[in-house]
Amino acid sequence: MVKVLEITESDSVLTQPNIDFDPGTDLVIFMQNDPMFYRKHLYPVLIDYEESKKNNSEFNKKSLLPVVDHAIKIYCKKFNILQDPKELFTKAVKLQIIKDILNPPVDNIRGTDVQNMR
Image 1: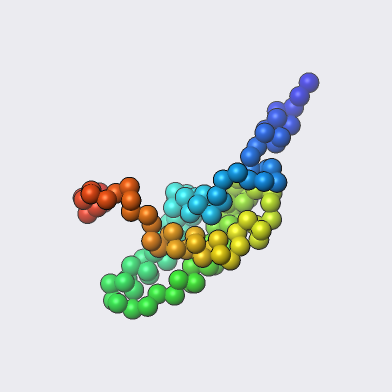
Image 2: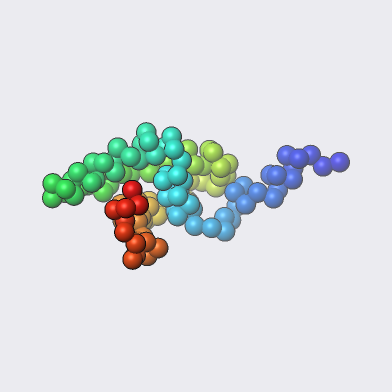
């Protein structure tokens, strides 16, 4: 007899030593789509970023590092990531995550009226 726990643990991509997807991109998606995380942690920083753009003032992108670090903790716990977060999310990966959050890809929405989408 096989326990359900044995099947789910052995077949889970997230518990394997080698993850076959980009954890940085996945973390960005998590940060943008998890309602509690977005509302409590990401949204306030994005508001500050937008206000700095409006006022033509400088925004310190590294101020997002604590938000990214907090997201990593929640993400790894929620999805049972067993790899060391420091190995998965290096400084370079974290900086790319910040870049992706502040400058999302627009290839998919080119040619559409973004103002009417809100």
